[in-house]
Length: 246
Image 1 (cartoon, one colour):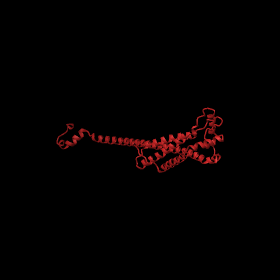
Image 2 (cartoon, rainbow, N blue to C red):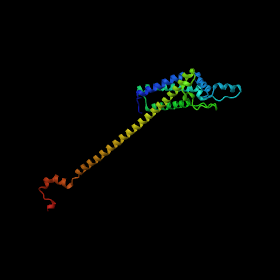
Image 3 (cartoon, rainbow, N blue to C red):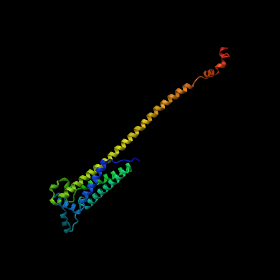
Image 4 (cartoon, rainbow, N blue to C red):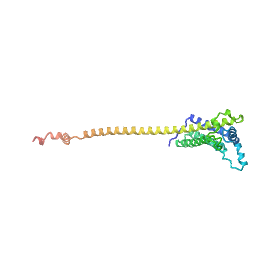
């Protein structure tokens, strides 16, 4: 199995993504982070308003389900993905330094991380359609500048935007790594195929040459029997007339 060395620039890019993601999603971990963004958008009419849910309880009605974009579970899953990315980075760096990183292991790492970050992007860009009067196909902080947010929420808004940007960067990096590995494998297969064809051509040429040489040797050995007999017995036959001369 082929062992590979991960280029330093790729390891540095992966380290930057992993550390930045852990920091950003760690800052967004407290429950008030999503709650304040939700409330800000609801009061401005950009999405459903969490403060209106109290009226459903007062009227003994079941309120709409909390959109996934505003759930704490989303932040927890994103933080878990960031921690997993950091762990895989350290594992890949150690294996690469020890010259024990096999290509299929690296590809598995990239496939897993690409799937998780793609899922994270889909969840972070999910909408809030729980209020028909104020539908929000995308979170308001992804379609608006943070300058329109409340002063106390602008920091949260920027963290949410930066988290989404880092998630995009992570998906691009791991997707590019997979494409790079696919191109390298295709190149190696093509190179080996070319080597095999070259060896076959050389074998055929050498085979033809050997056949020609063997033919020449065989022709040289085919001396008429009478000729070599006459040559071998010529001292004796010199004293006796041949039958042809009778």
